Image (cartoon, rainbow over all chains, first blue to last red):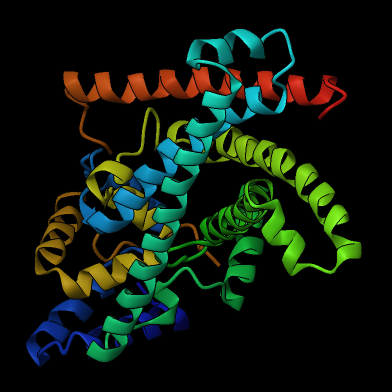
Amino acid sequence: MKLSKEAHDVLETSMRQNRVSAKERAEIEAVVAMLPDDRVLLYKNVVSNPLGDLYRYSIHIRIQHMLTFVTFLTLAFTGLPIHFFESFWAEPFNALLGGVSITRIIHRTIAVIMIVSMVYHLLTITLGSWWRIRAGTFDIRRTIIPLWKDVRDFREDLQYFAGQRKQRPEMDKFNYKQKIHYFAAAFGNGVMVLSGSSFLFPELWAAILPTSMAAHWQELMRLSHPHEALLALLVIAFWHWYNVHLAPGRFPMQWTFLTGKITREHQMEEHFLEYLRNLVELPAERKALQDVLDSRELAGETPSRKGR
Amino acid sequence: MMTPLTRWQKLVAYSALALVGLWTLWGLFAIWVMLTNPRG
């Protein structure tokens, strides 16, 4: 495979950061050179364990996802009957929990757990990045930070889905779609915490804001809280769940949130640059890939479908 | 190509899918409530 400039840069950076020996370098370059130019051939032929083959998320990220997952669903489930407490369907729901005042207490308690999860996440990414910078293994391309390449990947992926490209773009550990989703969730969390706190501590906000603005602020927050909740609910139900449960290759469920691992097939398709790093970091993966290339007679395949 | 799921893996995966389906119905209900209620 002839690597693109970006893929070549990623590979070189990874080999430098991992201080690979000359022997390992030769081995890595040999196996990369044997990859077919048509990556579709590759990921359609590799054997993958649906529970995941390659490391992707630490235990901290998985705990944070689980906390957000449980608290978000519970907050949305209790928030609706609080907002519409006079409705015919909300009354029995609130009565089941002991009245709307109890539903409110549950809602606020769960909200505190969600905020704790946010703080835990911020600590993880900050300390994790600091640790990597100190160790000399930080690579911004491997983080969730949006880069110009994501804009190009977005365009090229749309072209692929419109049938104008033969292959998906070579995306990194977090692709453009995941970055949009992540920052939308971060923004939503911010709005919910801000608006929720203004319901819980109106005096505090009245003391902070100019008198002329306090009432408008409360009104703005009263509108923001349920509508941001509905937006988040729509994103989770119709976007996130499609991507992790229903999308081709993921059905019936992507196991990464439990096992922390991604399938080889998925990583080659949607996170090819991260797969190249795995070839550098994991000698066992080089061996597994070599076996696939040999057994499927893919090595040195002349590309019949040029990707670009 | 994926190796097939074992019986318990299928149970976990399809149960999760069923929960997701139910929750999507709740989402549709929430949309209906928000759109039809004047307080929305």
